[in-house]
Length: 199
Image (cartoon, rainbow, N blue to C red; front, side, top):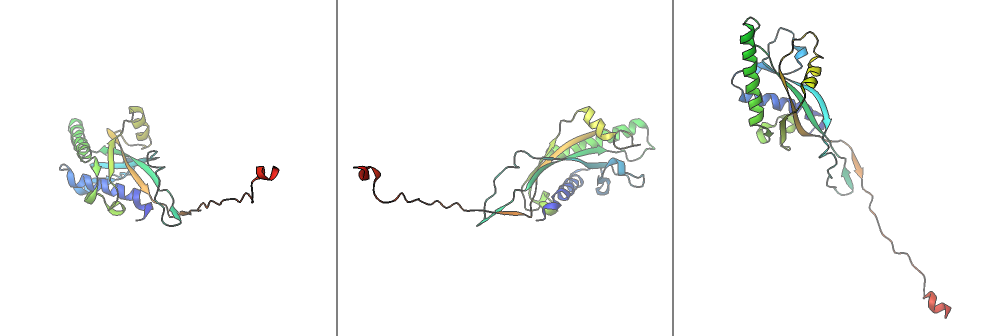
């Protein structure tokens, strides 16, 4: 398993989940991209944008079993933070219709993540296959934080978005550490007893 491919595999897994479970959008309308990358030529209805990676403190220090004289180096365990956004199919509709459409699509995407909050088995794609389950949790980001993220998408109108945390994701190390065995030795105290010698 290539540890460096884990982040990509999570993105593929989330997109696949939305494509398989959502009924309001076609497969090609779900994209793993930033809203700022939309060029007007493609019209995804749902985008997932990885905007932050944080260290998972709970599993980062978990011990790994040693094999012989070699101790595998701890994997880097992280949580991935995604921005889920719904986009209108066409701007030719009335503003109210566009808004209602976005809200409906966003609601279904959130429903899918809520109903499939734990992913395992065949749901896991690419480098995640055969590995540990991952969890999708709606993050409690403030309106200010969400607005700050969206402000980085210059010249793009604000769309209602939801933040999700996905993990734990283990990025395996290619390094290992040699174990040094501790050998106890008993030091000799010499022959005889010092008290007997004084007598």
